[in-house]
Length: 144
Image (cartoon, rainbow, N blue to C red):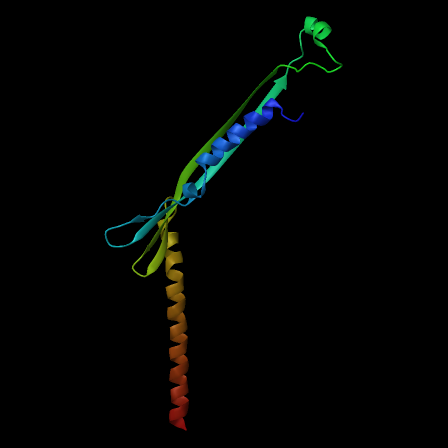
């Protein structure tokens, strides 16, 4: 069964998918804006693949006359293959002005803003604790 017709169907379909879906489909080409920022589109790619086929029994008259040399005649084959690809934009990665931001296409903007502000908030809270510690250390030193 070295070179079965279904193999060529599957190979053709998989090569077509490979040509469509590559890394540039997922992480798009960067675009530079007039202010020097770079915008990189990020997409989600989904693909599906199916192949099938059947060999048909030879006609009765071919069975009697077509068997030569002890080898069974090749059976007629019918089959097909198909594939589908879906590309959905997910986000844009914006690099510029000393920062990197991920801007989602379809999500809750409030939640994204909260996530963006968490590192700054943690820095401020840590700074407040350091100020309190310095103030209490200064008071202890002043009493001595």
